[in-house]
Image 1 (cartoon, rainbow, N blue to C red):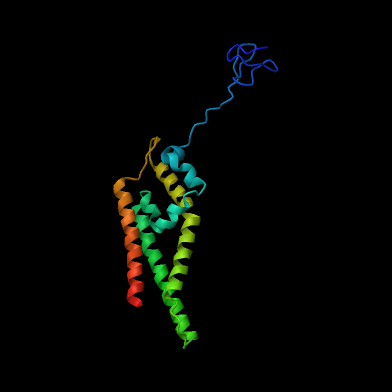
Image 2: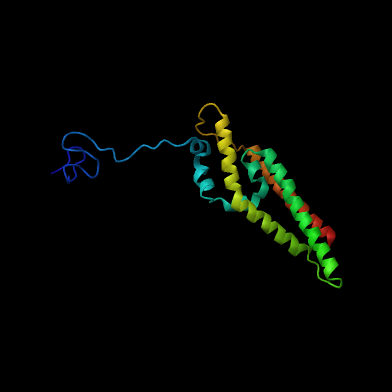
Length: 180
């Protein structure tokens, strides 16, 4: 028997393609799932953030990933803490090598900076999206009405974030060049 609606073959008294039944009812095969508020808010970035698919962005921006997503204060504080972590790790290892090995002639400054930088970036790649999702959920809860889609990144914020990252990298290289 052919379906009245789509013209395909019917099995078991209903059409497998469009859901039409012999009694005239239609089986709705595609449920309309309402997107959550956080999906509406994040828009196209929702899957990237949820499944941690934006690792390159997090690696390059590091603590400024939060500034990139409109959490400027948190991004600035984390940038300061990140740079303090890198500097203190260098100082601690330098003190350790000076105390334990007196006649060591190789300079470990670059190696220690690379290791500390890698550890801090690994931390951000693992936890930045989870923290960002929690902050965004809290932000959405504080809003009174449902936000359809707010892409909270503006061009000026992106430029400021990129300039801060470049300034951070450039200052690190200047410190290394000065120390050498």
